[in-house]
Image (cartoon, rainbow, N blue to C red; front, side, top):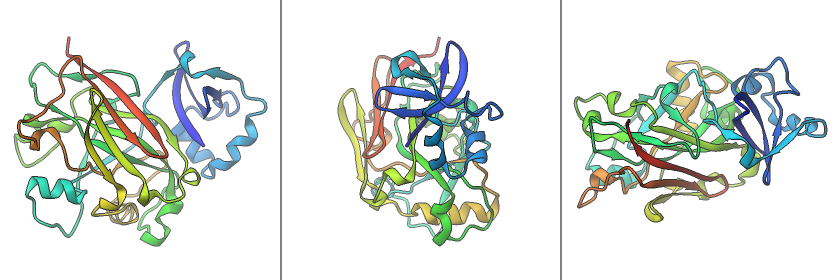
Length: 282
């Protein structure tokens, strides 16, 4: 299934996407305010399809998509988690994942603009796989990790590189408003038979700038869930952004940054394409 958050005539909704149609499930679950809450209410999302016969539907072009989970309690991002990216940065091998956080208020949806701030011209792309937690938990063993996954989505952890490098902490460069693109929808695990064989591709103005299989991940999804859930309880709707492959703009010669007028796309096989225009801060 493909599940999404969206607006209809300004009203926040959530629902299921089939082809060019969006089924509004928010009316079928009147006590559930959003997709994050739906994951709490229905950790087994397969039961949702039973609601489609009575659900109203709209065409995709009639709705305004929102970030898949507009209001996650936690967004935990992983740095240097593809071998190709670690090698291009010259960083040593690490025993544990490099983690930082992104604020939910920085997110934008598929089709919405990523904003290059006035204080910097070093807006870089980072195509990534987002893992959405369905069942919460603490001290989750890696062999049980996939039981806690509600689905997967595309993410662009767009980074303001000079602000990221002000100190050893990544927080400023990763949390400018309107820089974390998340969408277009969440695909449930049953739709993807072999996640490790899927590939991630980032294109800037139609030109491929990143491409890697998920087998290039240093810390795979079970390892990340086990590690993160050891120091904090994961809850439904939490998002783990799993890292970016090699090819980022800051490591290219010459360096390649996104500028107003550009279009950036993140495509993950089996999931879809997240596309965003780049605009200048007004």
